[in-house]
Image 1 (spheres, rainbow, N blue to C red):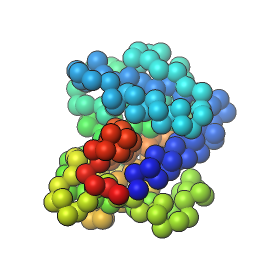
Image 2 (tube, rainbow, N blue to C red; image 1 turned 30 degrees about the horizontal axis):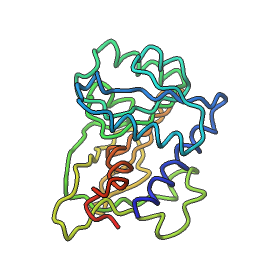
Image 3 (spheres, rainbow, N blue to C red; image 1 turned 180 degrees about the horizontal axis):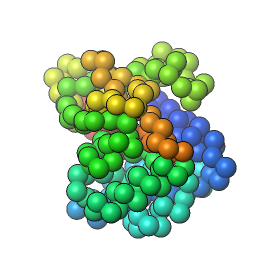
Image 4 (spheres, helix red, strand yellow; image 1 turned 60 degrees about the vertical axis):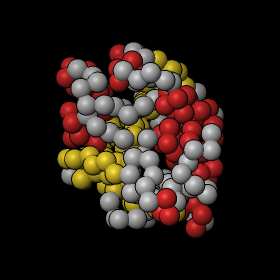
Length: 216
């Protein structure tokens, strides 16, 4: 089942990328910003983009990434990982027309751009269902095995931690089984932010090393 998610996530990001006049994507490596010891999150984002076949560039420089029309973060953005000035640069970049694709959002200075007011962590969310009527990015998602994705086996009682969001101006493109938003799209000025609740690494890398909490 998780292999479906890798394909669908790729299709989703491709649909965003191909809508841009210039289709290059910057993968922003958040490893050092977050003080992470491993690179699995960055590698997960890179593999996802490679699957899409979209031209991309990897950098750990925020300023360099902001030269691209689309940024996908190679990891969640932890609260206070970036300075206030850096968060403002991201806000301004999106407002001026940039597209940000991120996951497991924690940085409160970016909440307005994401169209949310709160981010809540939970390890008891086992299903994600696309709202195929919410936007015109789901043309290829028309099978029940594609519309509903397992994040874990509910018989395991808990699974990996995901985030759900309290919406302000954002709209939910997917929901968990408890009805909470699992993917939020928000228009901010001339730009757009897509915020996934699960971490990209948990959606892709876990299944490839057979650590997906029986999501099959």
